[in-house]
Image 1 (cartoon, rainbow, N blue to C red):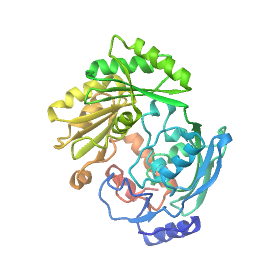
Image 2 (tube, one colour):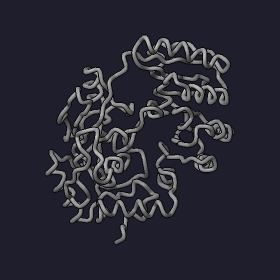
Image 3 (cartoon, rainbow, N blue to C red):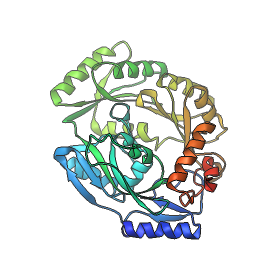
Image 4 (cartoon, rainbow, N blue to C red):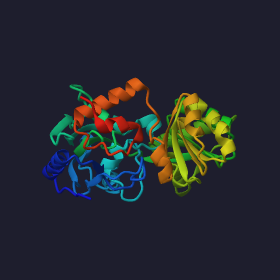
Length: 378
């Protein structure tokens, strides 16, 4: 593993990799190493590119280096009564850079948006070993191409971000989770859809295999209490809602947003129209799946022990796509991590990668669906 000390070090490492024909894999905390196919590229750790560059609580803007631990960023913001809007989650050791590069977003995404909606700008080093800057340290920036959205979720295949500027939000004065227990699939979807579509301003909605429906209400204390009472009345014909203590709510939300403790050696992250979430689960139940539903049904985690290739097929049939989030090495080697793209989209993605990385120094083979991008064409 190579660990650059600063941006100049990183540029020299990438330039040397291009000259030698090496494959370099950009790495944050290493918490997502098992995502994608096994590979043999040289790991380049960005952990030493760490620290806060600038933080202006009054302007709700944070500039930070990528190797900064996610927990440190969240703790600093919490001390100022603020938070990352997209509710990132990660294992111990996760970095802010890896979180943004992987496009991680939690249960609040359904109302607050994802990481790509809150990355204002960045400095990065491309596969040409050149520094480039995009966006700005202000919320209103409408000039040029929106490269922050392009690099968010790119998994280090376009360049290495060395600084990033994020929009942050005030932390709600009070947050209450309302829970209903023993709710069926169809009733749960109906309840979540009605809650999210109401004017009660529910910020997150999830449903667990164990029968719980979770609805989160946040804001000023007086408003939250009034809205929770209105929510219970609104859904009286669907389910009985009660407030859930924070210490009980936290692990349930964690399961819904990450699928971490689901039972099964293979775990899929399925995104689909919320109205089809119950259809997906019912179609896959004969395979003895474990599951958790987030984003009001827009995301469904599916875990199982024996993968027979049905998850991705059922997701596509219902207008969605399935990402292979966790699996044994032999399955990750033969099955693409991302849902297969249409030919036109795949070609466009390859051309974008070629523009940022003409020598293919970041094309490590991690993503098997990008096999043709390992030999980028002119």
